[in-house]
Length: 473
Image (cartoon, rainbow, N blue to C red; front, side):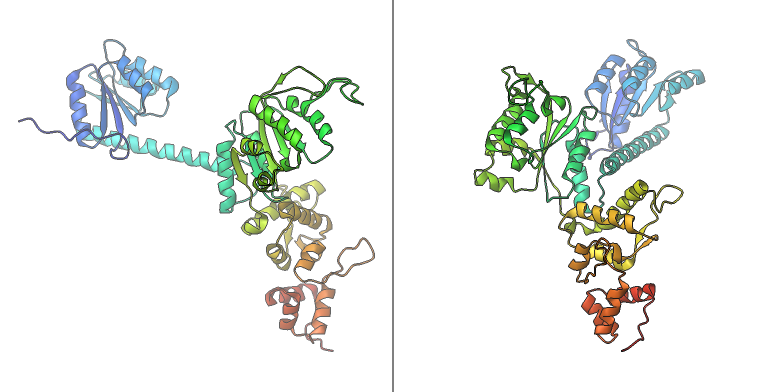
């Protein structure tokens, strides 16, 4: 009674791998199929080179066992053709001819290994298992590198918080598509940076990125800017001009604060999105364009739709993919990274406090950094950037004290801001601490409570500023 073989297993995780056996000899194919199937591999046979090539084009295999000598097409010909489009799949050549010259030729042509007939089953199985495992590991490493590159290939977008990493992943997925994107978030969260990242990582990167401020000017002016106009179409139209849509052809057009456009312009914009065509102001000729549209808003467009101030059909056309940016107060773990990023940028711009490698040497003192971390940042990243730029301009040494922070941050922390007579800059913070200590009879605990800062922070400031805490009135 013939030995019963295990049933065929489906492709996928239930098997150790999918293997294609290409050999013109039926007994060789059956022998390899029996050996490999019993080791829990899924095996697909091909009786000649042409059939093997067809199967490789139609599906994926983790490894190929390829006979060198076949009547229709030699294994070397099949190997060369496969390697023209697939350099990764392991291919083991099998032949009855143990010539070293043939083995070297096969390896030079792209074979992964070489076995002579008759082969040693145990050695063959070890080689198959190791090759599949190595190839899978290499593939996983490639995928990991791609994922990391996707997450971290946006140099102007700074953030390693989980929310920002998810957004960067989404940007990486969305960028290669043609989908319209709606970026939402509070003012200062970086909506235009996201739009530029999508454009820069798309097939349109070589095309124009045209940013449109929809909130400036009248509706007629906006339409002329968007669609262009012909000479004489209105007072002051002394020459024909292309609009933003024509300028952005084969590229991306970015509508900043899309919620500010009027109903009439909304209708015309909807037509461009649907038909990819428009008529310039004063013209009867239709202009066709290939433009990707990205819109941004800090308004609640859904509520505007309910209030009939924004067209529902336009809302759904724009909101194909929504990227919602979190406010900075919800990702405070990114603040140190953002501070370093802007220190580097503005130190380079101002030529100040740079090390030999061109990196910023500036750092906020502990109390200043604590104020930065505690601040609520109503202006988000834009407000933080302004605070860091100010610190670079005013810094007199690599250690940046709290004194140089904007009044809004100091006041929000409960620090009383004194003004000098030269531009309204805060006076040396030692005056604040000394006055406060005097008011509480030099009790550091009471002073820290009144200043709303940790006692350890106050102690650091007393030491740094040279205040004598033993003085009592």
